[in-house]
Length: 92
Image (cartoon, rainbow, N blue to C red; front, side, top):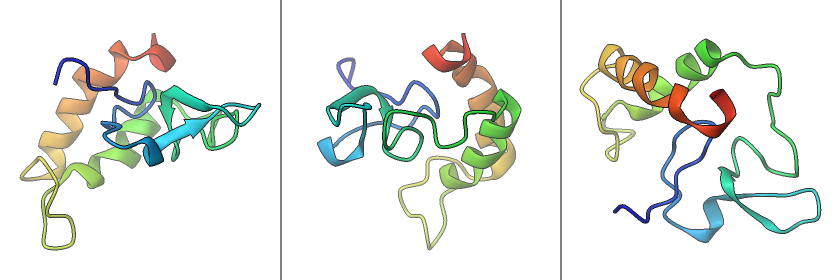
């Protein structure tokens, strides 16, 4: 898993080419996912780190609707994101 690419904005694992964002020239971005960087720019360029944490945390919670979630609750997800996101390219 050490060669796994992660979105350098939201931290999502990019396990499939379909998850890669696109650069302005239409080429794939190996730095950012399709949800953060769909066409050569961030979808929410003015988001703060805290806003990104709050928007991403619910997607990490395991539930019936989200069986691939990795956390038991949103507080754990929030804590994980607070530790990880500041290390990513967009937030350094």
